Length: 112
Image 1 (spheres, one colour):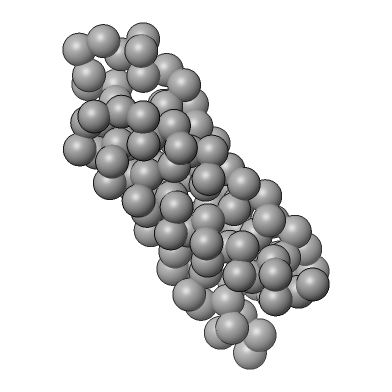
Image 2 (spheres, rainbow, N blue to C red):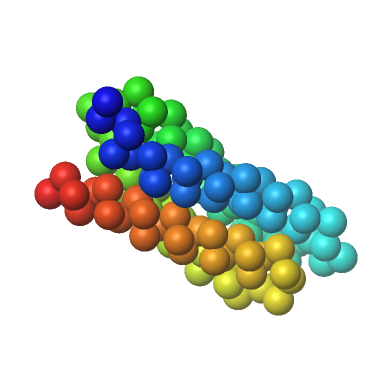
């Protein structure tokens, strides 16, 4: 089963999606929520792409490597944005996003 070779990346994507959803939800509870708008937007985009990437990899999709490349890019962007904020949920999300970006990059690099 080819998707077994994707398992680490699938797990990283699902973990990242959960972290991003939690971060977005927690950011909405911040006192100055307007300052968190870009973080929330990237959290939602990152979670959506991570779920999609995990789904495509789980079915051995033909474009799995390409979606992993996209996922790596959005995870890096989200990690960079979350890393700018002092809130613990943002710092944790940044770490998870960066780890997912690395796993996704490995999948894309493996196809090259």
